[in-house]
Amino acid sequence: MIIIADSSGLIFLATCNCLDLLEKLFDEVKVPQAVFDELIIEGKPQSEILRDYLNDKIVNVELGKYIIDTGNCGKGELEAMVLYKKLSADFLLVDDLRARKIAELNGIKIIGSLGILLFGKEKGLISKIKPSLDKLRNSELYISEKLLKQVQDLANE
Image 1: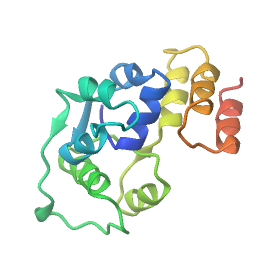
Image 2: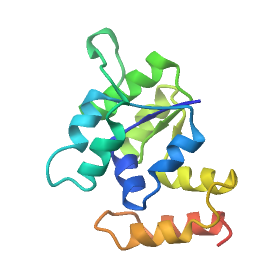
Image 3: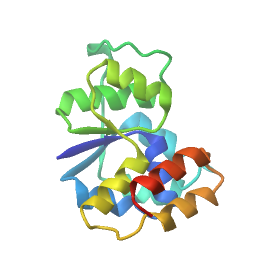
């Protein structure tokens, strides 16, 4: 299975030390150049960890050949959607609500960072997701408490 990743999902997974789940759940993890460029900006959360993790996972994408209703998506999100289509990927890892809606409109199967945690637990790769959710709660990243609680409930924790 192939997963294409957008920046927000990668930042969340890096924050809770769960990037390794991507390697365990998928045969290939790929990001477009624009996503990589967004992630490695100095001062961006987890930039150094993500620079090392993504070093061999970058794919150049030529947007000029594709038309997708962007709905004001950023270049990284748009390139990730194009790369998903180009590689016939299985999932697009994306957390941004606007980008998720545009992806769904374009027939792209999406999963969020919290979905990755649930998938990892379902596959027996992690026994509890609460510690990861607590790391996200204690970070500077925003995820609604309501959503974190729903995920924790889905995990029966």
